Image (cartoon, rainbow, N blue to C red):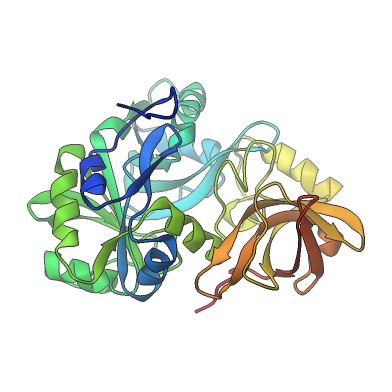
Amino acid sequence: MILMSNTDIILKRTPLYNEHITAGAKMVPFSGWAMPVQYSGIIEEHLHTRERAGIFDICHMGEFLLKGPDAESDLERLVTCRVSDMVPGKCRYGFILNENGGIIDDLIVFKISGEEFMLVVNSATTEKDLEWIRKNISPVTALEDISDGTAKIDIQGPSSSRVLEKIIGRDPENDIKRFFFKKTDIGGTEVLLSRTGYTGETGYELFFSKDKAVRIWRLLMENEEVKPIGLGARDTLRMEMGYSLYGNDIDEEHSPLGSGLSAFVSMKKKFIGKEALLLREKKGIERILRGFICEARRSARRGFSVICGGSSAGIVTSGGFSPSIQKGIGLCYINTEHSAAGTGITLTDGKIDIKAEITELPIYKR
């Protein structure tokens, strides 16, 4: 734990905290953790990830194991993505919903075997997710929270495969398909290596024992193509791809349908919240999540109003400067009648007006 000097909030530390301090990171509170927001600068770190390879400390995320003969059928009812057709080694993105169709959390399901699954959830919702899952699984399914003992490091960028190849002796891009994983030895440590990420680049996520975190981090940092990347660049990278951030763009007040994420919902099966989604679909979606590009570098921030045709038409949920396209960008909920790409909008907080237009996702296209 660490007590931030300018607050009364006690924050948790990841096992890589001292590595960040040594590297000169600026630390900030994030979901109850002391996390690096930047090292050399957000723009530089962003572009380095797009051009070479960056590593991210994601040890604050939550991980659960579900085991037992009913684990698969329990998950089918709990998550929106289809589970029964997954093969061992497959991972899939989806949601857990409340009875009203609101998003409790977005997550990734990893199928380890026919009777064992790992769920990777957001740090801020770990306790809420655990309680919800425990309440909605059968008595014979074992649920274990392995978050405290699990470390997670992401390596992302066009050089990430080459970096890992030097360490493991084979090209993981040829060895692992997108949204698949394998257990791999890295420097004598067993690692669950998945070809997934939050940047839109070729990339991998590494899960392993917490006590090996510093060793794995330093091993990756030995490569000259690798730099550490903070939360600031992680945010701009995901915004360029139009990836939602839980707590900003999606939450229990929004459904996957209104969030433009219906591709990750299988309506061919039964799951908690399905009836509510069908009802929302029948009534029609009033507002939908869309991307926007500003005319200049300045961008709106979360909470800015969206004006279209002289009237209020929505609200900004994420916004910032895009280092890749050199303009302000972001995500907003906007009335469906104004949601077509190319629609001109004004973003305002009552003092600042920013001209922008709605765009297709992803916002940044290589």
